[in-house]
Length: 187
Image 1 (cartoon, rainbow, N blue to C red):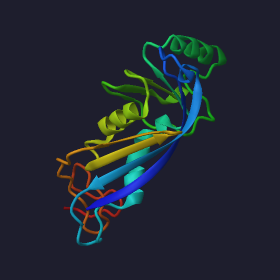
Image 2: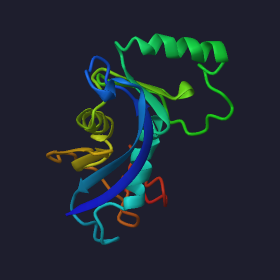
Image 3: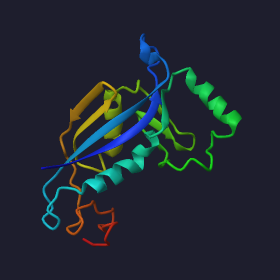
Image 4: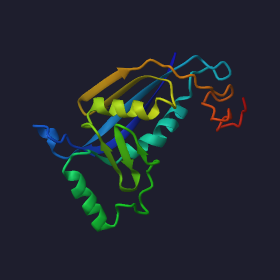
C-alpha cells in the first residue's frame, strides 16, 4: 500500500543551450508528488503519515523553494554570484529563513545561504525527479515520484528496497538508535 503527499515549489531556472523560450530565465510553480510504499503499520493503521513524508522531504527540498536553479556550466552562474557578492547577500541575509541544510550530490549542490541550487543537468521535470529521488531514497521507501511544472509533467516508479524501521505508535521512521524522534518510543 502507499501513502501519498504533495509539495509546492516556487523556483526560477532556464535551459542553458536550449533554442526556445525556456532559454530565458523564468519562474514556475512546481507540484511534487511522492508516493511511499510499505506495509501498513498495525499500531497506526497507515503506511507512513503523510505529514511526516512532507516533513522528511521538505527538510531537504526547501532549498529548491524560491531558489534559482542553474546548470553548473551556465554562464549566468558566475554573474549571479558576482551580483550577490556585491550586494552582500552571497553568504546569506537575516531575512533568508527558508533554507535547508546544504547538500552536494552527484546531481546537484545546494547553496542555501544564497537561495541557489546548481545542477549537473538541465533542470527539467525529469531532472527534478532524478534529483529528488537521489536526495530521499535512503529516507523514504519511494515507489513513485511525479513532478509537474506549468504544462510539463513526468513521473518515475522505483522499486522499494529499504527496510525502514517505523514506530508502532506514530508510524514514522526510527532514528539510527531505534528511537522515534516524535514520541520517544524505543525499539
